[in-house]
Image (cartoon, rainbow, N blue to C red; front, top):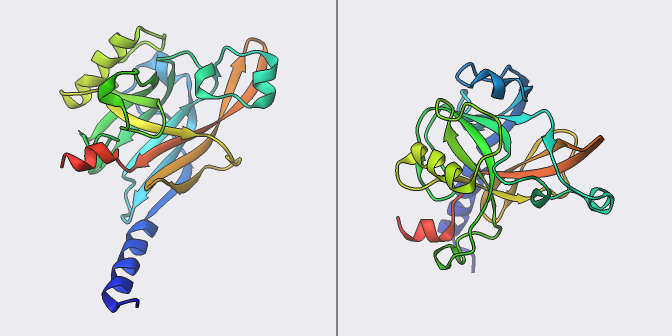
Length: 223
C-alpha cells in the first residue's frame, strides 16, 4: 500500500531533481585563465542552475581536442581513451556550493579540466562505474595547455582541495545531441555535449558525459 508519506517524499525528490537545469550562452572564457589556455576554449559556456537565478557552475569546452585514432575507431565513435591522458578539455567556474565526485568541496573560482584515467589500484575498486574523469585544477596554477605526466596532474589537482585530486566523473558520451542536455544517470546529473576532435587532418566528434552533480557511493558512505 502506498502511503501519503511515501508520496510526499517522492514529490519532494522530484522537485529537488527538477531544480537542476542548464542553458548555453555566449560568454568568453574567464580572464583568470592563462591566455594560452583561453584561446583553446570556445566562446560558449554551459551554465548549470540549481534552483537559483545565478548559475552554480559554468563550463567551457575546448574548440578541438587532439586524438590519436585509426579510421575504424573514428567510424565506430571516438572514446575518451583515444584522447591523450592529461589533455586539457575545458574550464570550470564555480559560483556556489559545489562538490566533486568524492564529495570534496570546491571553492569559488576558476579551474581547468584535464582528462585522467583512474589508476587500477585496490583503493579505487568499486568507487565509480567508469574509470575516466576530468581533474579540476586551479587556473592560477595551470597556465600551459600542454600535456603533462599523470603524477604532475594529480599534484596540480590536489591544490584544489588540499587532500586528494578533485575529480568529476565522465560517463560514456553516447546519444549526445547537437545542443547540450542534462540527464539523470546513476543518481548523477550528467551534462551531455558534443566535443569537436581532430585526428591528424581529420575532423571528428566525440560525445562527452560530464557528471556535475552526484557522488561516489563510497564517498557517500564516509560522510
